[in-house]
Image: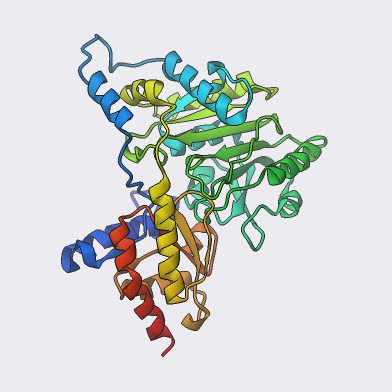
Length: 399
């Protein structure tokens, strides 16, 4: 066989890339039935307009003709961009952060891969609360690590006792995502403080694990929720994020890594992340958008449309009788496979929904068997017009 046996196995497995497969199937269905007849909730592709300040900065910088304006820079990124991100993190974490803590990356996905390459030895474990972003499995496996899935509580809040029981001498890190994809849960400050206490206690007799906070949805929150502080409560914290979701720039692939300045090995960790940025072939984050974000890092988009769409989708699901968790952030609805389906096989249920031209992401891919995810970063008309399709799908189940 020409390709790796591992890659062949995972890319052809039933659960591999289900979100992308649904998205691509949606394109085909729209070509057959028409754009307005297919209700595609599969992919978290933010659709709010890019903020005007960013578009104006893009237009301004596109006219610059300086020599080497689009050339290489240090692997960590432009100093002025790292300084801007340090200001951003200082505001978010309410601690003083400088540019020496920051490494620019190719999106949050690139950031996580660089961090795992920097931290993991073969056989090391990374604990993740389930459900979680499906690609975490691959990111950890890329570097010989093992993803240890730990169930959250019934309301999808952190089960700190379960995480404590999962810690071992091989634990290199705990990876959390708040607001969470796929549940929309925002972990509370008390949860983070409790988790930090458990990790510090574990570190007295073992390797002190890193707490990796994946935060691309940090600003997209509802109902007066607030993403918890981590730097002031746990020294071995690393934040990774991007401008994909909050600024609707997923295709521009600009993210960053920020290591807590209180981390005892901060300099080594930052140096390792800079090195892995180079040897993984990223080399550096995109030059042009580093310049854009250096000027626009503090833009405040209006996310009220996501809140409106959340509420509209809840109305649709209520009409259909589908159980869901109310999202506190991000733009995903985490729904339970109806008991009337006769099986909690979420992949089969998502196939059933396709008959009504509804595209959803099966929960098994996220470590949440028996659930499915709906991304409501879609047009209001798509949400509102999906009502009959959802209602009819459920009526036909109950016949």
